[in-house]
Length: 492
Image (cartoon, rainbow, N blue to C red; front, side, top):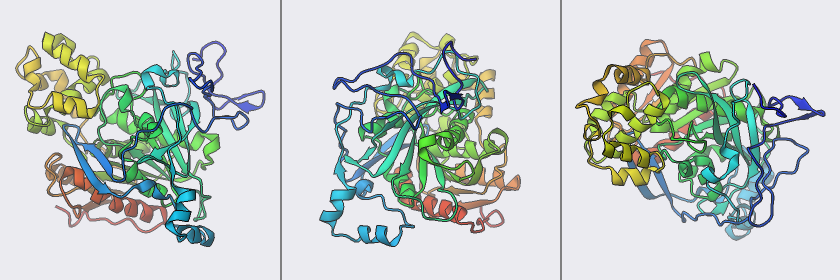
């Protein structure tokens, strides 16, 4: 159903495509009106005036988490925003890439332009229509063009924030926000420009943790990872997940919801007129840690949920296949803040599971705090706490309904139809290596084409950095039509 005066997304009104507007209009402090539209004939500001981007610095600090803890790695990456030059660049582009650094910087590296970006809870763009329109998953409800910056520098891409229709863990319609990023350089490779649907590692449960907000403010620390896809000329869609950006809390580690959000981000990118992506473009799925968990769920759900998408392959990094095992490992330890966050997120995704009614008063305060916080905050605040210390029952995870929920989010029960690579460091201390082995065995037993890739160096955080080029190379092989490696006969 639609509200009075609304037209279904993608339909024509006066010969032009329409989108839903937000609940109210907004004018920035600089007097510029923020415009929500994917219409080609309506001017959309490249910049939202007012607030300076956050400068992360010359070296990226990558935040990646397990779905049960968080960590920071500083200085691991060179600034990815120094240039976004496709690997398939034409001779003129290659010549530009070889220009002296000073001259090239004048074109490729510009300090981030001042841009007002109100936090999502104060920005009506993120408030979904009520009720959610009766349209297909992946339909764009509204969009607006933005500038994206990384490491304090604007990058040569076209980017849009989008609000799109998706589906929850319990198959209810919802709205999810995200970002679609397309290199400015024309695609010169074979066929249509490929699209990567990228899923971030744990950011938190509160609205200011949303990747779309962080990309607009220059503080998205995983930009240095997925910019490697942009460097090859591929488009990238980055979902915010359910309840991260849109009213939350985020349905943290609710696997089916995460997978749906990734697949619908790809659909939304293909349906965004100004992005210029074809509806038969090859699609790669990629993520690490919580993002790897989301990617694995998207790979498992793609054939049933989004059969029209041309999914070429999935790169699954450090995915916690069995969340109950991870929770038991980290509950009460340094990573316990994210165990509590998982409980809060799952309680929102599965509202019939007992939660508020079994929390103590202190537990209710904990849940309220974590619902609005980003990972750095609750990881520090709630380290070395046990879930049972906040509940009136000794072992809440053993309750029958919670056992059903934990079984529902466990990976491995469905075989992906597209080829996949599972990459994981054997020395990962957060998402233990046995999680990758178990997922690989389950998928291989179901007949999937899987490359098991343990050649990832470092602990959990460093593995995100060292594994990223491996993931991009794997997807590049799928996009170029190479036969997908299959190690099911030899992997552990």
